[in-house]
Amino acid sequence: NENALKIADYLNTNPKILKIHYPGIDPKYIETASKQMEGMGGMMSIVIDTNIEGINKFLKSLNFFTLAESLGGVESLIEHPAIMTHASVPEEIRNEIGIVDGLVRLSVGIETLEDLVADLDNALTDL
Image: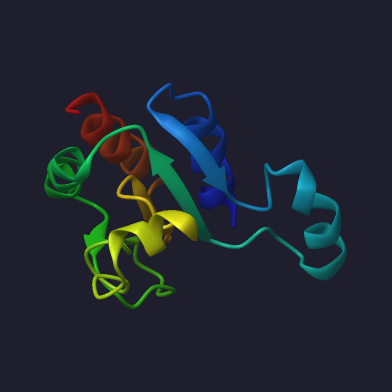
């Protein structure tokens, strides 16, 4: 919970991030989430201002986030729905439902916060 909230706050200041789906910083959900949860959880989705080539470069640049389709462990994981879980869905339908090429899902783990932020920052800087 703590790592995810701090990472969401960091990403919220990065100009390469177009959108963050995370109840801990989204006014639309924070009140409901606060009533239902003791923390805001470790799962979030972000939309990065890049194309599929940029996303591939971003994913390859990460050292602490492991690319995986199964999210929710104690280690930090990342998933790219457009080329993984929703690869069989036609691009125009993916775009309609918000699964754009720049969307990635993060499962923030219990590693050292500074390492996770530095990992994301490095990968975003390389775009």
